[in-house]
Amino acid sequence: MRQYLYLLSGLAFIFSACTKTPEWEAQNPIKPIPDSPLGIDSKLSELPEPPTPERVRLGRWLFYDKRLSADGSVSCATCHRPENAFSEPTATSTGIRGQIGGRKAPSFVNLAWTIYPNFFWDGRAASLEEQAIGPIANPIEMGHTHEAMVAGLNNIKGYKKYFKEAFGAEMVTLDHVAKAIADYERTRLSGNSPWDKWKAGDETAVSDEVKLGDTLFFGKAECNQCHLGQNFTDSRFHNLGIGWDSMTKKFKDEGRVAISKAKEDTGAFKTPGLREVTKHAPYMHDGSVKTLEEVVEHYNKGGNKNPYLSTRIRPLKLNDKEKAALVSLMKALEGEGYQDQAPTSFPQ
Image 1: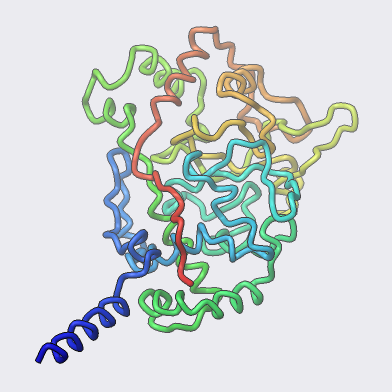
Image 2 (image 1 turned 60 degrees about the vertical axis):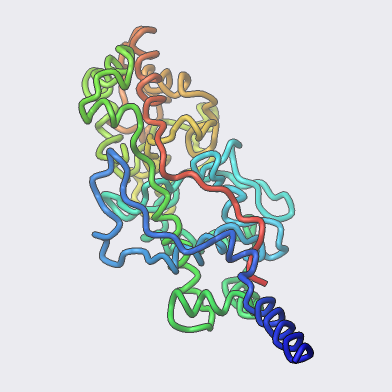
């Protein structure tokens, strides 16, 4: 009888060991899709194809997994850092083998909704899915091929369960990788900022300086010509004169024109959203503007003159008090909901 009990105990131990939740799953459990915070009127559930908890969990692993790069040295999060609201603290991005790119990684906070479906600084991607997998095959970013990346993931047995949960099949495909990462990105929401609370009726949520900044933003400074809507962006492209070389009469990076082929798009780049903008320094597509104060001054002077300068850019004649108020307004857009940190364990 005692031997029988020992046998049962041993079998129970073996069963428990075999069914123990893997560390990577314990770190990254399935979670409900988040509600939109104050200030964001749209809901993820209202999207044509809403994200699912299973796809988001899978996408979170993939977003932070360096095995998606050719040499296993970088992940999506290498440049889109959560502590910087999924932007980065450097002027431009660094990819595999220390290669330096020409542009700064923009934030994708609140990009589940855009006025126009344009992604990247030049708008070359028409969806978050297309944006998600672009850097994987870029030779100076993640340096892989899509085919090799998919083959590599198919060789990781631990991922099969989660692809099946998310998509109904264990086989990894490029479309499923793109969809999972994009759905994780869609859940990075920012709202409930002091500005949102003030707009919702709490007069004590912001200072008088922020209120002045708001009046200027929607009035004299005309910031809302391009920074509009709940995400403070029109998702369009404008030439501010950034990167213009007055000696050579050329742009180091010609921006949108390479995609649109429209001459008027020369030197034009997408309007970034302003939520969590304090986390994005340095600023502009090339990180050439170090502080928000310098950003405001760039607009105040009327940008850098060039043949393609946006007609919306003109000297604003703001005084020091007004410029400081605009900076305070942007600081009041620091919110919550997007925060995350990388898992330390991944499917094996």
